[in-house]
Length: 76
Image (cartoon, rainbow, N blue to C red; front, side, top):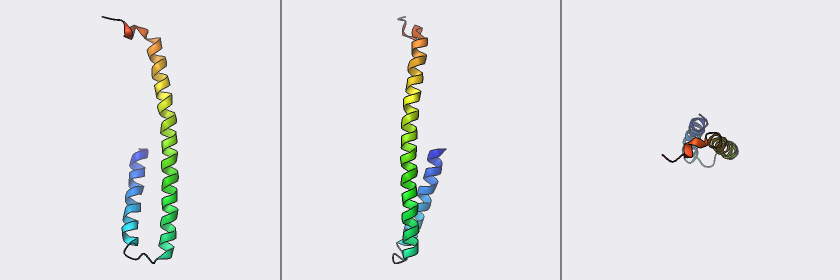
């Protein structure tokens, strides 16, 4: 879900940049795009840190589960 939303915002940003490049002297749009870009980078960094934390949690939970079910390592 997070990645779909981010993809949507990246598509919007791309479209707005393409329009801006047709009139690069539009300072108001340039300022708006810079703000949009900054917000995108903030969101991307947030997702990266969130997923990094979750990845560690998932790995820790998996390790605990494997310890609980040590029978999985039984040689057959």
